[in-house]
Image 1 (cartoon, one colour):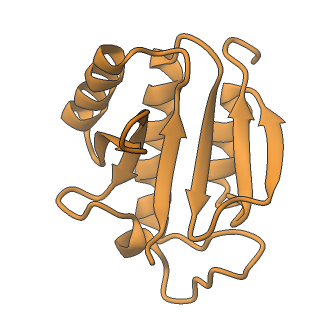
Image 2 (cartoon, rainbow, N blue to C red):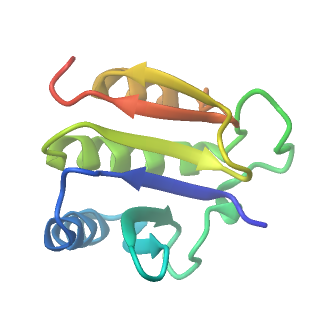
Length: 138
């Protein structure tokens, strides 16, 4: 299994997700790609990773464990993820979600965009938490 950084923007059409992914990747420093699950009824989302990696495992600190309360990311990875999520927040047209997962999340937490950016910057991303972000609330 791998650490996945997933952003879901349910109100955005596929073409808009591609624009957001391209814009975020072009600005760097992380890669943002459109991905999906499901075969017949596809559900599209954004996957954030280090360039060329496809997952976020390389962003983990040496002491990171999947069963901790929060993810331990390398300091430079925390900075990069903070910048990338800030860009996504600026591009999102409606409510969206963010999750850093090894396993499916078991908790949901409602936040505004700035609160999520602050959580990431502090290195406090919950290992089992899906963040539900309300657009424009903050």
